[in-house]
Length: 281
Image 1 (tube, rainbow, N blue to C red):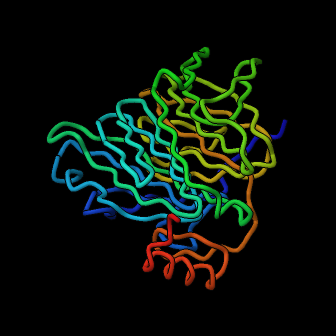
Image 2 (cartoon, rainbow, N blue to C red):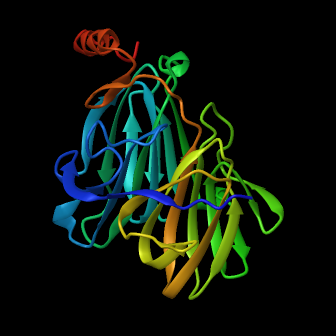
């Protein structure tokens, strides 16, 4: 196997979204800072209610998927399809906007910590106008795999962990996404095969760790270079980090806020559909 190293570091920047929720954005901080097939990665986390209480009132999407992973806190999803989902500690909401969805994500707490991540996963042109869908994935449905030196929560994809093939709560799809939350103990070590066909990144959000000889930057997308394996080692504090990878789509991207299509004409049609009430028709 060929070990991957870090080829680029994209530090997250402080910004806000929704009705003023404070976040850190790495991938997607501008429309030129992406990692195909991923459009955006946001980290949110605060024990100050003013940073998150306004939430994300009703808003539209078209052309991609959102994956929201809650580490701590409670948020309610509602959409025009009639779906309601309570996102709590350790849970995931996987929403396919497809041809169009209108939804809200609102905090269900007035104090305490709210902490997690939202990932935007692009859809290929052939799937951008598919029917909208929503999956509410409870924590107990997400495999938690122990290994010598830590544990791994496998949200999506398939990984070979210490010689045993493991499948996440979500698998398959055109982009074959891999999404894992890796917890390493002090000095913990993990070697994972990772298909050379996938582009990926590591996002360190607690502690310290190395990829091979390369130190991982905290609160940043550590973009992986070529290869077919990764080797992680935690520092004296241990580490918690995300592994996110997927098969590149390789198509043009034209984005206008919450709409992601392939051409400007498609964006203009999307805006017309939204104005005319046909976005979700």
